[in-house]
Length: 280
Image 1 (spheres, rainbow, N blue to C red):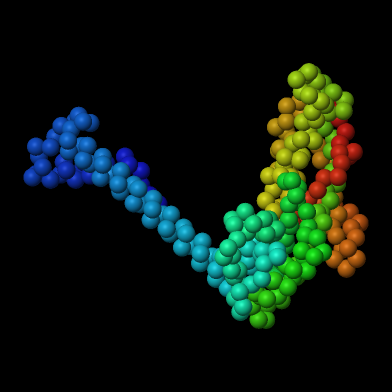
Image 2: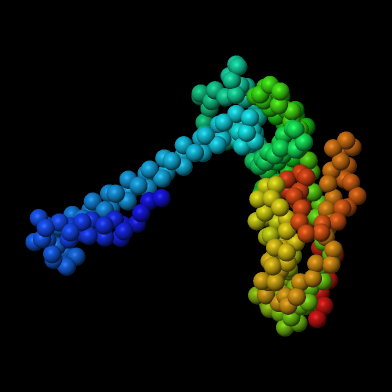
């Protein structure tokens, strides 16, 4: 890790002080010529050490992402998928010669991916995005992605591509409110509140903050709600989720969330806030 300039300067000044041949260099003025030289050399050292740190990280990232048979390699390749482009024969790369950066970027329709090991096979979870909202690939896009993954997957690797509608998060909350701040419906009372519902906004904000395939922790959600102005006590009465049945394509019955859960699809949606009640 790169040292800061003060540490390097001190080491050099200490070395000057310890050298009897440099005894005449004893000025304490920060404008002394020898101190200015030390500052310049120290600054150059800082830049060099930062470059070394950057290079080391880049090399580590390449090793992490490019090493075959690792989940991170498959995630990197899922995100690199280009819809409408063909692979160079016998490779896992595209020939983008003649295409603009905008067209290339637009073809990368997989915006989120997570790859994990599960019972001897890989779960490749993917999602696209439309106006900031996560969504699955459509039928034709999924068909192309499946062909692409089949082409690049190493021999003997079993995998499942998960391209589902979002898990549905069902919350039953009892919010003990400050009646000076929130009304009985959870709306902010102040005129400049603009008809906002801070609790609902906080829930949606928490969902946005979750990384793709991130773990939803009820305690963390409760902590988020505690920080909302006008909320005295947030009580999570019940939490459930519904996931897609991969055999039928329909949502299964709700399953309880006790402490934490990872979405089967990689992400959640909150359909409504009918389960939120406000009490004093």
